Length: 222
Image (cartoon, rainbow, N blue to C red; front, side):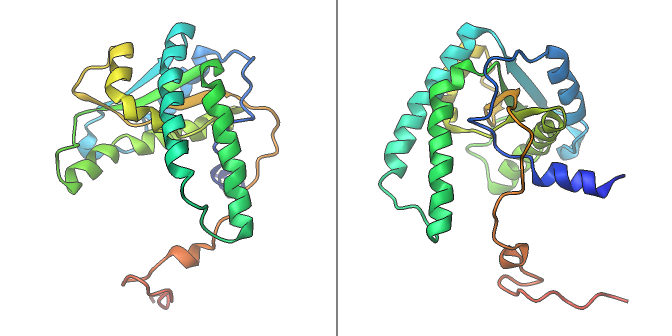
């Protein structure tokens, strides 16, 4: 296995919004292959309760996009009251992200493929363990899907704002009430190939060893 290639894939799989090619069709076979790869991911108790709902019909995309846009408008109004955290560079980066998020909200209906990773079961009234188990049985597969897309020249973005109207989306798409929607992934080929690692705080700044807040790594065993 070429670690350099793997590392590049993992560090350059970005949330793509403005650089989604809204005019280029996406072949169903590509989506199907990426789903085949995605379901090799681990799932709790080998339950395999996942389901990937792929939306390509223009009328359906328009309806789901309308729910997303309405939720985004509310979210933008709520978050606009709060100052962006961090230093000047962090705030500038957040401003760029916000600008691309607005673009996506206004163009979601034009994205050729909308994909909803779903999982059988409901845990909103359950405890933390049950919630973690359910989402842990679909999120690895969804991330594998996004990596597989990236390897084939397609981009996506993890969005959840439509879940404010989860029941309305379920009614539009015929999703049973026993199924949980976890995200809405806009998918398209990307414009350009110059994706780079994002600016992040160092891993050691967000890592603790053995006890919360202990930053110093232990000596290697043996």
